[in-house]
Length: 155
Image 1 (cartoon, one colour):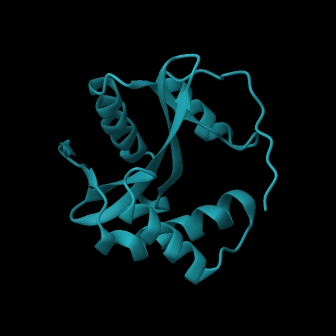
Image 2: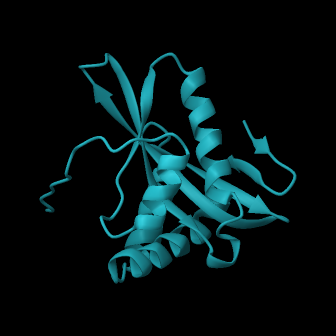
Image 3: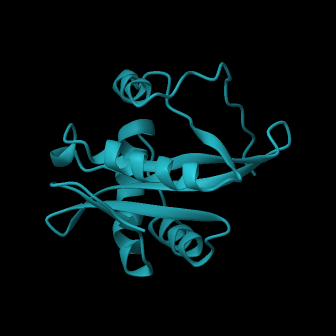
């Protein structure tokens, strides 16, 4: 399924998009966490995700045939809701395409897919505490702060 607006075309990502998705993830890591990702590791991670739609799904927004932004969803089973929550991750829009509705197009596309799937109970994402502009965008789209802090332990 694809979504179109006069300026944006949203579609599922393909294996051919992997280098662009990996590069976008590297840009995002630098911008949000001042972190460098290993080229091979991130490309293998993206390629592995694209090969396993049961693990995640990527979507891209194109403007004039050029990929301007991306989002990935992963899946969490919620026993409280007897259904899935879709997590939006790897969200990135090229700087020259920001504030043009690219993320909104991606979000609305994913939201529509979720609403059409009777097993999906909602969408979630996490955002850096300092990312006020992102928080404002998510609020405008109808998302609310869930009241949780994210903790992790990496291996």
